[in-house]
Image 1 (cartoon, rainbow, N blue to C red):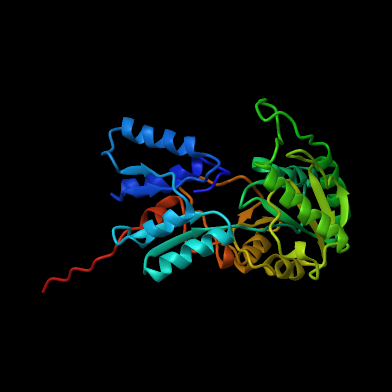
Image 2 (image 1 turned 180 degrees about the vertical axis):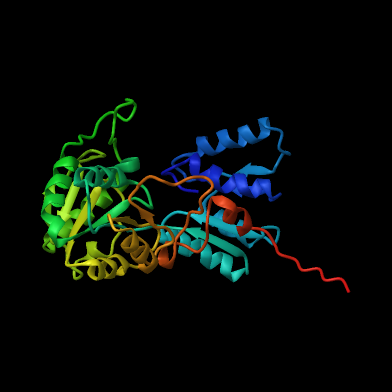
Length: 324
């Protein structure tokens, strides 16, 4: 399990599996072992049998050996493409069911708006949630031509107005990134984007692990950042001519986790939602995940679903018994 939601990610995997009778061996991210142990204690206190949920502080090499053990029936990983590919490779060699929830470069498509200020507020919320360290955070903002200039001006101003501050304060919107490595990686991506011709409308730098909200424009398919996931408070703006161009750009990615569509036309909303290549589409709202709704992606964003009834169905065997 990953570090970016160290308690929530564990619970959304563990709860449905324990409910259907599976036992769990869980390796937390090395940055957050205490949250996993706290959850293990919660399950013990709740009366679950000893060993039903086993927290395991193991190396990657040890985990590879554990996956190979015949007593392990299935493997789930939430994390990066690199981690997912590595786990899936080991699981595949041993014919184990594998569920993957990986990265995303979610499009935020603006086709029409009765209240552009409200759309901009939603855009900022969708980009800065969890300091921008969310796999299904909006990262690519695709706006039709007649709204682009106004949206770009308002969005850039709203992002620039958010100052990174103390994460322990209740009114803090944006805190530091998770590590120096994460901050350095984002800085490297942004610097490379600028070197290749992208324009920084605001932000673009950091102080320690505090990263200024950043907006890029003039990104083209020839640039590396066009294909990358920016895991932090950085957004890319795109101008498109119409609905068809917006959908084409939204789908021009190896990822396919979430997506966001803003329009005042209900028929257009349904039409565009059907055309987007993603596991989830949210129309005229953001931050709308919920425990009863399935969560997951397509393409390089994953192969399974968490949450909802589909999550409980990921790791159960189906058996047919026919009696004559």
